[in-house]
Amino acid sequence: MGLLALSLAAGCSSGPTEEEIARQQLDLSQARLAVDGLLTTMHAAAAEADLAEYMGCFAADAIFFGTDAKERWNMSEFERYCRYYFEQGKGWTYTLLPGRRNVYLNQDADSAWFDEMLEHEKYGVCRGTGAARRVAGKWQIVQYHLTIPVPNELAPRVVQMIRETGTKP
Image (cartoon, rainbow, N blue to C red):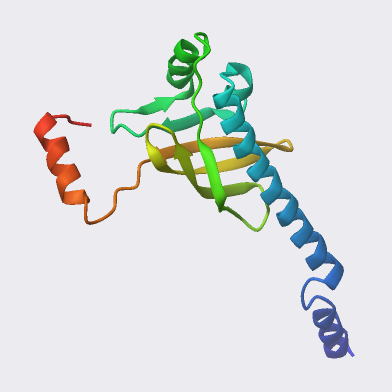
């Protein structure tokens, strides 16, 4: 009888129910939309030079990597950089290319990583990549890395140009 009870108990815990799977998929879908919204808010705040809204998109311990190899900022450094421009009413506009944002989540829907392709008037097509986490129901960016993708056929010339400047990261 003990073996039968054990077999029945094992059969009852064979995996999540359809309802649990549907709820998890809904949680993941809602989290993906929330991260997408966070990135949209971040870009809109930058374009409007809204420092409070912009910095509010980042966790206090976040790191921002700019397009220049020397640009690795913690949030206090990055806020000083942004404040200088935003107080002059100068923001920056990066427009998401249609269908070019991907958001991925861990199974618990509390950590995300993403990539997006953006258009900028001066820098052309750029790529943003990063990570976000949800703490107490709020999503915040913990790392953002803005790059200018260089086509492989141009890379040797670009590398040579950088070497000629003598610039070191």
